[in-house]
Length: 366
Ligand code: ASP
Image (tube, rainbow, N blue to C red; front, side, top):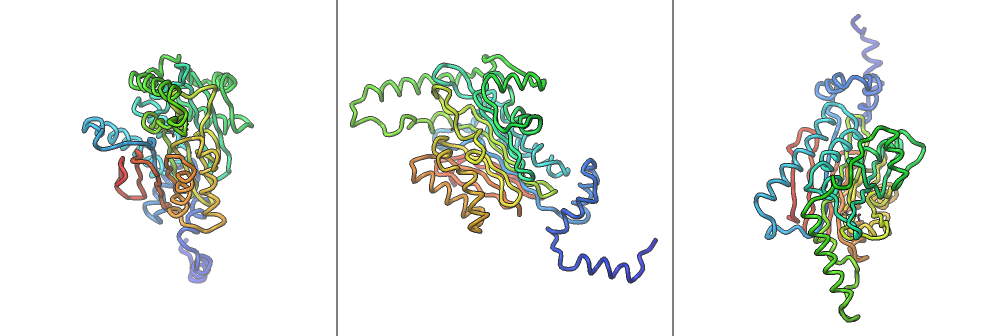
């Protein structure tokens, strides 16, 4: 039936004054969530909802002068593959959480990063993994820490969020939960990589030297060298077609860490945060400093209470980390699809892509 003139007028009046951004969620509410094809049609034919996706593969002293061309190619290829995996999920109308999880799983399976397969070694010669994920539409979150046998910690973090009434699980308890959920467990030997093992030996030798040094020559921070040897934590932030923001982070932590040390990556509000009203954040760097400043939540608060732009807030919070003595960086995405990538180190493995944009992969400061 052709709409008559008065009905057309009614629809026009009802929609008048509504911005495209306000229209998208309304249109989505009438297109079923289980029909990504219709949603994709909606996005390409009617309106272009803003989507965006960003990833990091750790911050640290990454100098071009010390990187071979082949190594750089390897990193760029893996970062591109990971970035496009998440982006393609978003482009088809998939959920931000799915994009974040799929991308981080891929990075966890690569020995290039300090997460999953490529996790660094603890002082005891073991590998202990941490991860977290957050859904900005519900403020639900899941986190896991000190895992020894979980191939993909990010997926276990998501199960904690979706299949338990808790937010954080650690160690053996978390692994018992994993078994109940049918998650793949692997022996510790799965995480062995020669380069990470050698990094542990270097770190221990340096620590011994520092311990023997006279008091006035001792470095201020016990982990002064961490940035040189432990970069590679991974993270992703996403804004999906429905306007939902998600964020996730996964790490092996810090080379030579002791006594069950846990960093910022699995701490909601420190290493990871997501809120549809503000932004999604994933951090990397000296975890102790990121915990003390509740970096990810602080950034979100600056948007919520101070009305700063994403870039201003990201730069401000990283400046605070630096002032306190910490090194590192973060990636963030806001509800309008803006992406910020701030760091105070020589480099940060990172990638970003917006709706219908080309992927951008960067490693060094400039
Ligand atoms: N933030 C991580 C931690 O402290 C390490 C890193 O990002 O490289 O565990």
